[in-house]
Length: 342
Ligand SMILES: *Cc1c(COP(=O)(O)O)cnc(C)c1O
Image 1 (cartoon, rainbow, N blue to C red):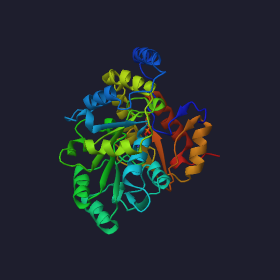
Image 2 (spheres, rainbow, N blue to C red; image 1 turned 90 degrees about the vertical axis):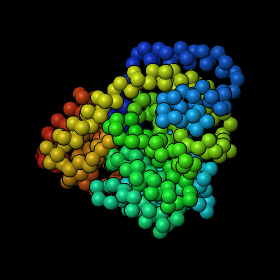
Image 3 (cartoon, rainbow, N blue to C red; image 1 turned 45 degrees about the vertical axis):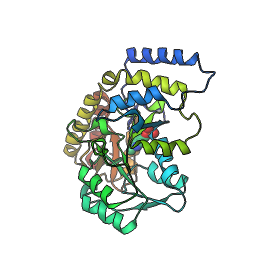
Image 4 (cartoon, protein in one colour; image 1 turned 120 degrees about the vertical axis):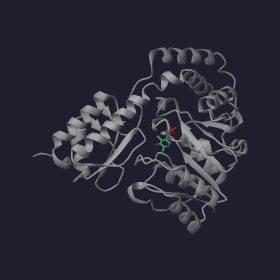
């Protein structure tokens, strides 16, 4: 990690966790450490119950599976349902780890194009599945790195078209408008639908490594076959449990962050850039004349953002009001379209 003052590159929640929650986490860890000579609860029963309660939508603990970050959730899913001779279909530009984890598990990575402004219509998803017949379909909703929301109708149509697994990565779901429906609402009656979440982003818990998914209980049975024994440490379980007990407080900053995202969506066009609709905690903007030069010029001002490899475009995480303001001011100082002044 580069030691920069303004790290707006990996969509972390830049707000530290509240101090009273931190104290409860430490107490929970202190209790867990007294039995650390024993292996942890490999069924992470208390954590599953807590995650099921947090998710709501009538989801039961046996529908929940957890791992060390949603990256491990994705990897275990590919180990269980992908592998040599099988394929997974994604819609780039999308989460960079999807193809990397596909490669790591020997699963063939297939791609299909998105519609205008990075959306995916039901027809586009169905046509791609019909043409390529993947074993697994990956969606990312809202999509990283573009922020694009995904209509539930697209997920439903994709599910009806394939007899394989449909995996929806909802890492940024909490930043969506409260009336934006989650794929969790589609779970009843769809035993091949998997919806993953993470505590890394909205929960400000990236360092603790806790991702999870909700699906039919048979999915947990399949993932049990590929996970390493006792994959979820007693300390991870204890920390996550304590944090979940403070869910409303942990999520208190989410509205502020969504407000800063909306500020980026408003103010970047005023600086001459085009933004893409985002329901996540970051914004993709294009119209940058020289992305490498803009990236470097911002870095000289101690701001790290992300070049996601889309020509003319850069991605920035919505931080605190101060961080977001400093980013916008610095970009404005670079002049029209990020051109570096001589
Ligand atoms: C950040 C991110 C994740 C990563 O999550 P961890 O839970 O920290 O492993 C998963 N999916 C997407 C789309 C992300 O952007």
